[in-house]
Length: 289
Image 1 (cartoon, rainbow, N blue to C red):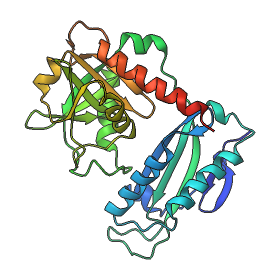
Image 2: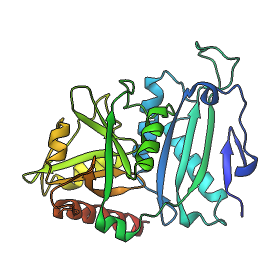
Image 3: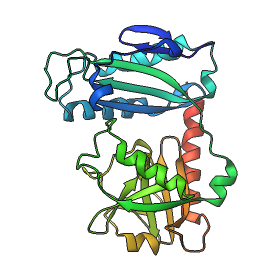
């Protein structure tokens, strides 16, 4: 059965879903989005994702026509419309909200009607061998704007960096400022482990406050010394362990950066323990009503 998408009050087959060519999301990237992971057909950390969506909307001065509860209910309607599809195998639910359609102009009117779309994404499973062996990364100069905490569709720097990483045989690109400080990956948050201390960049305008990042900080706090603190590229190279987090990646060890081996070139024990804590949390979530 077709993937049923929601577009501005209507449910339609994904292949038939359309928006106006004058939509500001299409023309300017004047839009925000969220991807919510599905486990056993249930949306993971839905409340947190919806809150971040509203935070992003507030920061770009986008007035939503929905309350948080109404949006949460709408996500359930999308799942219900897809109940006869392979939704349990879906990777997650994609939500995008744009400022709406209007004649092309950089300035915008405050009375535009936002465009709201939702649909299911296919699963992107990371094989157990990759989790065991770890992934590689390259670094790139940080050239994005200073509001990376807004989950906007303006992703061209991330796209180009991700493309270059793949072209060079790496799995992720990591941004580094002119001052030599590591911010985040193209689609992930970055953690390092040094002397049993776990560091990750503070949740400010230079990074996206990842939902998985926040959960990892919470889960690790009881067992490890965890700090939200800036660290340098040199510290990244010399780290005992490096790992990245994101909604689709969960917790993934990095064994090489810029062709430089991290420690012994193996996924470290703390990274493995963090991933185990995360997986236990997921298993508990799956069993909840």
